[in-house]
Image (cartoon, rainbow, N blue to C red; front, side, top):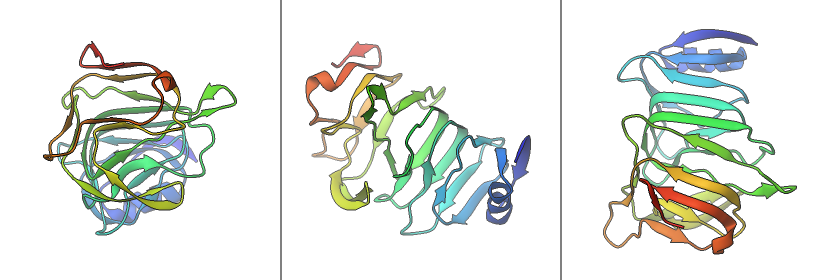
Length: 203
């Protein structure tokens, strides 16, 4: 395992760097034809060119996080009904997730719970250019805790069981498809102490 940055430019060099235990990868191209990736804990991905990104094979999921990641300046692309950026089912302590300047084509699914009285997920989302959370889809199947369920493409959704201190969105929360609400709060109001969107307290 090495802390030195390794520059990758195609699917092969990307896979080799992960297999070698490289902790910091610099993405120097639009990498395509990738299988779903469970990113090893502590791994950082940073785009170094404007077109930097990871595009995954049709019908497959995208990047799945485990713990303590920094991901920035990347385009992540899957089919619209697949999760472009999500979490693995095996992670117990997610540490800190720092996500910035990401462009997602596909779904974003970060599910949080409270374990032993402490937040299981403390995610830092600080995009500099694209500050919004936007969805373009309608409804489709998603893999949640090992089960395929049908979910609508709400931009911000709280399901029963979620707990946390705060959700902070620097921009707007938008569902672009007609008939899809931007918010879906199924969880009790007390589940999250504060939800702040574009400087306005939503809850």
